[in-house]
Image (cartoon, rainbow, N blue to C red; front, side, top):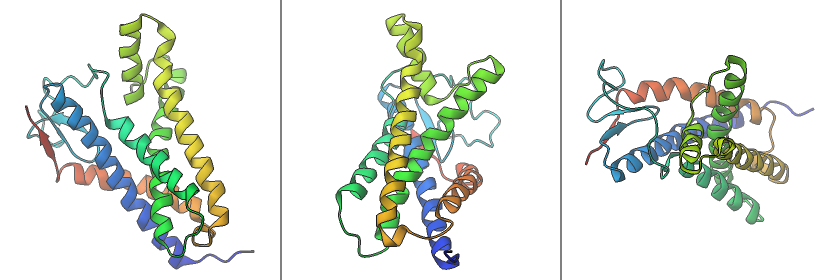
Length: 216
């Protein structure tokens, strides 16, 4: 039976925590850039999009701001999925890993998979249980596809696509890790998901400190 290596778990946890926060920040920047391109001034941080020069703690953070996506070309989800696919590919293509740098590669692949997988699954289950559509980025894109093509079922295409890509990346990485010494230790998956949970609290805290204003 493998012994728990506290040092390895701690390092892996911190790497995953950093990657979750950094990747979510890039995801939000994708939203910000898309809004700017489409002539909408917004501010982005580590979790929420709102009015330019405003913070989530401000009462008018979203005053008059339409939280519903109004354009198909949004970079938030694509940024996350590209990171997941790119780092999964790097992990699979490279034959030998001689140091702990592989943990950063694996973390970027796994964390970005989780960043889209969990919200999409929650959106589906909450919609089924409540009978009301639970809005996520992919659902908003789906709604725009319905408006454009007048076909109701296309609303599911973006969320199914994100779930499929996320699951495939997660499975491929977890299978590959069995061949890499630096990724074989007890508690790896648990610390990964714990880092995901902790990242929420840190991202919400940072959201009120660091903002980028995408003005037009």
